[in-house]
Structure formats: C-alpha cells, structure tokens
Length: 121
Image (tube, rainbow, N blue to C red; front, side, top):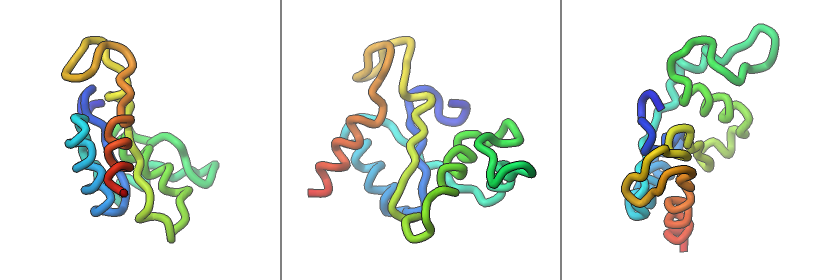
C-alpha cells in the first residue's frame, strides 16, 4: 500500500510477456495494476538463520516484493515464467466508493482475471 496506494494491485513475476498480457487485461477490465520488480538485492532480506526461508522481511522496506520473493522460493525453476503473484493488500478493500467499486470488499483481481482468461481463447 505504501508504494501503490489502495486502488492498484501489484503484479510480480519473471515473465515480462505474462505481466504485459495481464496489464492489458486489467486495463480492459477497468482495474489498475502495476508491475513490481523481483529485486535480487531484496532477496537477502528473507534469509533466515533458523529456517530455510523467512516469510517476512528483516527490514521494513520492500515488503510487497519480499512477500512475492517468499512465494517464488516455492516455485519450481521450470515454472518460474508461468506464474504471477498479485498483491491485493491495498486494493482488496476500500472505505469509500471509487470508480466502479462501492465501499467494502472490491473483488480486486476478479475482473482482470476474467478478462485475461477470455483473452486466452
């Protein structure tokens, strides 16, 4: 929410093409998305001395990206270009109506995923 605010869903993944296609679908669906980079320097923030990997960053910066990097650690190498992570922490709920959303749960991602799936036909 710090970087993108409450109206934009962060999108992370390794495939530029998949992120581009999803961005196009989200635009067509009237939802806002922004690509967040998997920054290799942030990866060290989820290292752990007690576990294989830590599910929270050891610093208060780059939290959305380190959460995506945590999930990425469980994706097999051959599937890295086939998945995306959507950070809906900010966009899933709003206290005031905006654009096509009423207040409360926004259903963030539902419209753009529907549009994306239709584009696969």
